[in-house]
Length: 297
Image (cartoon, rainbow, N blue to C red):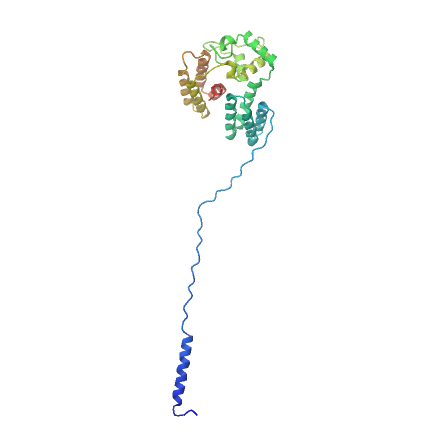
């Protein structure tokens, strides 16, 4: 039996043990380290947008003329993609470097959106290529050229002489010149009335002359002259009148002494057209383009 002599001692001991246990339970527990959340790196490089290209329409053509006629129709309908498709088909069917150069230029104009010019140039070219006349009519046109005395100024082979090169000139320009004449020219050209040359015969002659190419007249344009003609054409496209004049004069100076007289007269006529205050572009455009295409530039 436990002695009652020291009851307070037992009580004190129990109190101490109890206090110690409570203190141990209340000790702060070490905190578990929480890892920092991962920061995602955001790329600042822009993602290129997906470019959707118009598919090139598939085309079927019978020949070069068919391809160009369909390209002209598409250009007149303001259908750029279809016009380009037919022009590329025409390029594959081109028969010589002159044709390829022309069609490549038409493609560039179409890519730039100049569809009105594309349609107009194709119409002019198709007029040169077919002329709308058959062999018998072509023979008649050649006879008219001789009968009316055209050869005396414009050359027996249409290559020019005292007058400019007549090959490749647009039919409407030829008809206007025949009816009005050039009385003020250094070597005057007379006007021809419908009584002297009927409208029907004039249409035939003008269409025939307009379809002629550089191969038909056998004209060889010297390389240095051709280079300046190309630069003059580029200046014309930029509507740089001073630049056109500079390069036409350079082309004239680059002509060798034995160059065909018709080429010299043609360049002089182009410089004269450049002096017009109005419509100087229209005065040069077709004639200069013919020379540039003929030179293979």
